[in-house]
Length: 309
Image 1 (cartoon, rainbow, N blue to C red):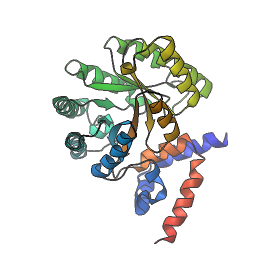
Image 2 (cartoon, rainbow, N blue to C red):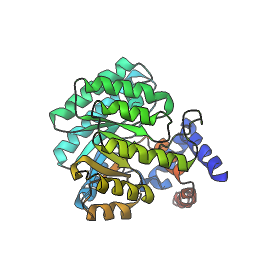
Image 3 (cartoon, rainbow, N blue to C red):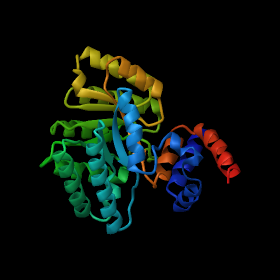
């Protein structure tokens, strides 16, 4: 009960513009540098170099969501283009992840689709892949519709399905007709029971069902730090003799490095989600909400930051 309440509070704080402004006063000293690779793409690239040296791939995400005007959306799209250019110039092994609300989805699907066509086309020219992150439930259907539209012209774009949503199995089966490249995750947003399973056992059960289904129909990115889910996924991979180039494990920057290293040593493909940018606060709060015990770690860093002023 207490953990659930703390989770709701953290997610609420993460959506607060005032809290975000306050957090920026302390910058990444709050402890966010544990989960965020830096403010600039150049800083993020250095983090990716370290991951590549350890045998891991990466996906870069310039943080930002829920933009409020066309200029912001255009600036976000340009940053995605620049990130792709820096990836290409640096030679690192990485692709791009992005959120459609950062590209104007709430301003109009035509605005967002225009930006996405430009980004995915630019990525295709350089042989890069673009992953569309899934956001809250209100944006699920528009995201999948836009993804399907993009797949009419491009193969280098993938999407994310959240296992806690009741609709997820149907979505995975329908996307299988497109041989969609899917990242499967548990889900990190607070949603009503009418659309999402509240119990971990139900989410885990459905997560494994989705992994099994997607492994049989397309490229599967299994995004989790849950050791039991990883072990069960490995059993499915062995049982169905899934080739190593048809799946990968994905984890968040700064979390579960020991699991990442073990999977790499066993010969599995591992990709690390590397976020960067000035708009890091909402992402940071979602990471804390996933494990509220981390709040003590953050409070300690806040005291240190204040003491150093």
